[in-house]
Length: 178
Image 1 (cartoon, rainbow, N blue to C red):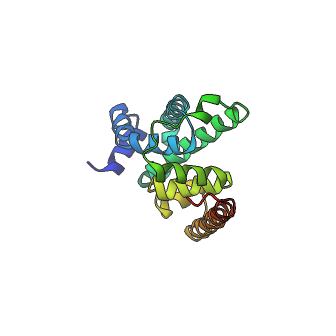
Image 2 (tube, helix red, strand yellow):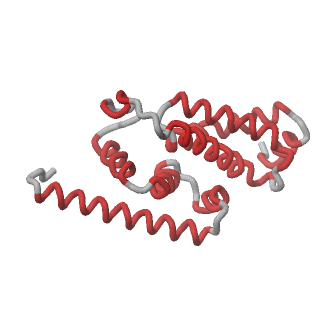
Image 3 (cartoon, helix red, strand yellow):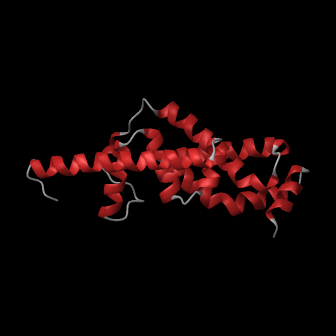
């Protein structure tokens, strides 16, 4: 089915077309929300709010070809809003128990490294490397040029390498060689 045609139908008020569009993007939406938020309840809230806003504003979408990017930008804004609201609240259980989505030692190390990075570096690296959001889509989401996104990714990777190197050096000097 042609996505652009479905978006145009949804813009004209076709609810089935809008439902179809949401269904084909629901896993991507969940993965992006899960990347930015720590628990499933917040992810669900962000996704629901994003769907409601997208439904009410779809007529304002200028280019149907960019529906996915537009939808993800709305979702990221909702995630940011929830993140700001929850910033001061820390659930002790989340600090002491690994999440169900962790799968192995490497995943834990990656999550630890990403948690140490500045928030924007961490988000950008998660979206690009873990969620496979393209540079083109990231440029649309962040409303920046593709070259700017490439530069941000390069700097975020360099920052991650520096932090990782410092941690490994610290471990080595303190007798923890693993």
